[in-house]
Image (cartoon, rainbow, N blue to C red; front, side, top):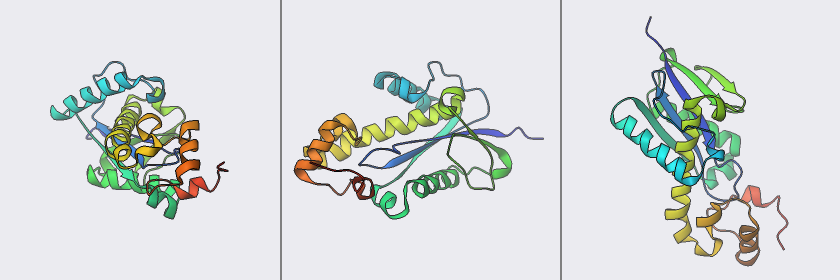
Amino acid sequence: MRKKIIVGIDEVGRGPLAGPVMVGIVVSHGHIPLAGIHDSKRMTEAARERVYSALEELQAEGRVRFGVYAESAEVIDTLGIQVAIARAVARGLRDLEINPADAEIALDAGLHAPQEYEQQSIIHGDALVPAIALAAIAAKVTRDREMVSTVAPLYPVYGFESHKGYGTRAHLEALARHGSSPVHRKSFLTKLVLG
């Protein structure tokens, strides 16, 4: 019987007030020969960038495959964050051509793949399963880069290059002064009382 591939999935950007949510998917045939893989939230930006570069090299060598899939603030507002994440997961699995019969999917807790896939949702998966940790790192690096290089220059008054859309004091103060932008999640902002 053919050995199943391991697919790690995690999301980044569930909680920000602005910008997309992104799902990382990493596909391997077993052990991933990378050191320094940890929970992305406990890593420095430089460490995440180093691991991301190494992941790109492994992909170029054909040892892993990975992709990052985004859903916009507009989709989040229209469908809700859970549906937006589920859409990104399903799209990524299609894009990477993951056959349900060939894959064992490991997701960080609370995430789900379409029901035809054999899957396990793991509490603290990004700290316990290297493929999930790498998926989180890929998603985090991709989202941070987009917020800094693409979104921040379009809407400079909000300081996206520093807070990446999260609800920091500086971000809340900018919202109070300038109102929201097209990349803000209006459904999230209704829960805030802005001075």
